[in-house]
Image 1 (cartoon, one colour):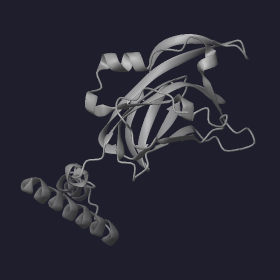
Image 2: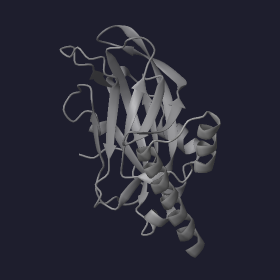
Image 3: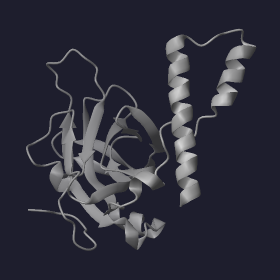
Length: 225
């Protein structure tokens, strides 16, 4: 059964998974959806990320103790590419102090959490501090991953809720999104390299030429709009 706040019909519900262990289906039930075309006001986010009444409303993500790797906790959020929806912004209420967002392996941004409340973990009789994190993506996407960061070597992360703003996929989204490397000043990079007495390898020069070509295509597309 779907849970969450949904403004308007959604074609297909996004999937949410974790790199740490969680009870089957529990994490997906903490996913709340809204449509971004209604506007993501600050007051709206305050309501959507309101703290829970008790710790019973928390989902526990636990590090796999059988693994010797100190892997951080990642959440994987994905819309069905054929579902007609894209992710615009993300908010989460959890015990993680900070949240990093990645599009594939590319770093997108960091949200530094705001202390919202303390709740009591009935099983461990421990006080849990919940933080509110929110990040609006520069470009909408159908998939991203979230890295949840806490101070100290925590073996678990508590999730209260995750709110995702989605919008219909635009027919000209490829034209409206910047091309790869469109924000890189290639001339400045090359000038810095030359001032340091360094030369680009043939492979690096080929990559720079490819990015320059993509930038020019992006400029040409914008001129035609």
